[in-house]
Length: 97
Image (cartoon, rainbow, N blue to C red; front, side):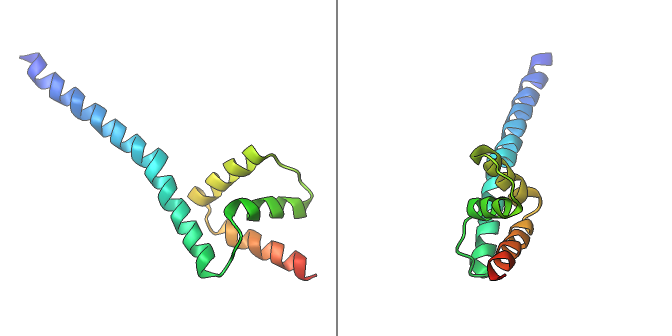
């Protein structure tokens, strides 16, 4: 009798956890990436997220690894997408001087 209740409950819990992790780790990042790329395209910015971060830190005089740039790109696109526009403005202002 107990198995009749526990088995469907366990299956539902596992499916729910797998669904949440799939959303959080894959779908959410793809959605954020699309959102940032469409914003960059909207403002006619031809640089990629990677290029913007790399040039921004190069202009600051900081040397960072490719892995760190990828981590920063993911962090910025998920938590602070407006930072790409701010960094691009900073790069553009440096080039105009």
